[in-house]
Image (cartoon, rainbow, N blue to C red; front, side, top):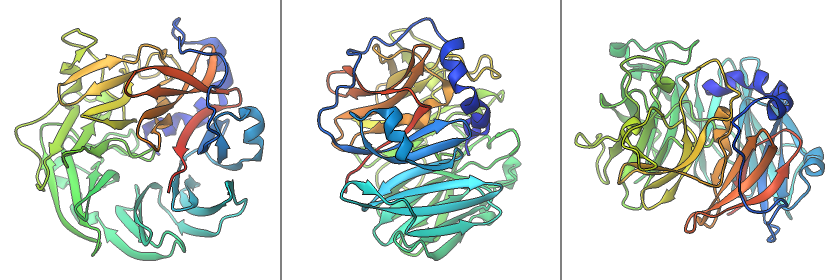
Length: 408
């Protein structure tokens, strides 16, 4: 339900026209015209088509247009995940939300859900798995986080966030977003929306620290170095991460830099600490970009941490905020430690709302990327060590959205 998905009904209907009618003149120079995956490994895949997304399991060597015919259909405003032998879908439709669990056996996803949970009158936007006994579902319109049993999907606790609305900043609702778990604590961003209709989050960072054993809020911390962090991160929970040192990083896109005075950038919570680091901030617009000292871009919510302080993500800006269909958003590798940004040279720019399609593979050695330009759609693999890009699947029906590795 992030800002981009408010546009997805229009975007999906127009997806066929987009591929032919508009875009950057550059095209991908990734090697190979045919899919290169030889392992046959299964992935949880979602393809966006018209007003729906189609979800199922498949190998990247499969014929995508035939594969998708056997997938289940779900509303396009929703997230998918894989955990402990099951596929989970979390979708919103008509102001209500449904969480469903589909069992996976012998490489096949069941046609019918083994369990369901309903959330009435709210948009449930994100899943966070703690362990085989607990998962969390965040409610964007409910100022709440629900704890559930991952198997039965029965509610075990409700964490009320309404008392943590940042009224000092003019917030109307807390809106939980991107989250990480460290030391039995969940650090979850609170977007603190001041204008929900226009997706304008609060002017400062806000993060709730929740004890995952008791489901109680320890405290809420703030930083004025950036605007609201985390975003309504239903895509793949990538506006935050924990690095190898145990430091937590949150990103703020400053409501897509539409609001004058809002600061975008990364902030940090150091290992063992429960407050923001007052001495560190990384504003993306100040980063060296391909050797140049300054730029006007902002990293959009979407991407994945790939280790050693590096983040594979999206880079661009909305100089024309009404144009969602230009192929002008660049895939990049951000070095957060050294505060630099480098383009991924063998991937052409793509559509701004493609960010959910970036996923780290199970072995941590490569990134899977959904992509489209005026030549068509595909799934690519980016090798982290070499920087090499190879095509894994041609996408001719809809657009690749979620590409989730199946790993237990």
